[in-house]
Length: 212
Image 1 (cartoon, rainbow, N blue to C red):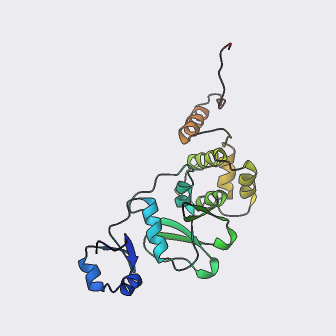
Image 2: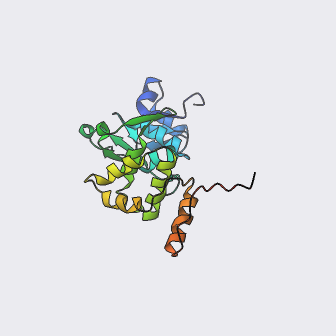
Image 3: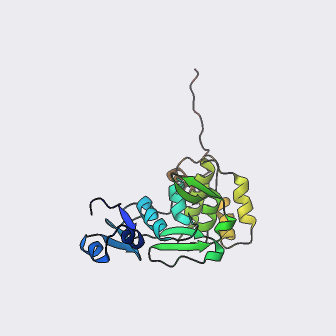
């Protein structure tokens, strides 16, 4: 059993001559229906790899999972037990597996490759999280600030906010407090706190030099 990969499907096990009884006795755990692994995933990358092994259709990581992998400010980092968010083609129907949250519409999204993982492009990751009821105004402002900092354009955010899709009004509210130049979520938080306290909005990335 030491020669088996870190995870394998039941079909792969059968092709390798490994019986279900051997799998059960090996100490492997069944993390998804039809998938056996050395242990439960402890990182988002591991959770995505295991989810990808059982999704039998085109797919890409989306939502907060894509936000984290793209390096955008997340609502909170992925933790063991959290689901993986994926997008699949509309015609294929949603993935109905524990540990996977899926949405349809992959054919309308641009997909990028990050270290071998298919992800929806940044603006689509932003669009996906707008409908999350747990996302606060501050979460969305951090996300928009981070999107601009990593090279996204204000025009694409404005265009997304103008569409008649769910969450567009929340995005328009967040854009009123979004600023180009914030380099970290904590910087965004400080700016919002100062504004909420009634203080003048601070300038960002001011260069201070001496006479030389």
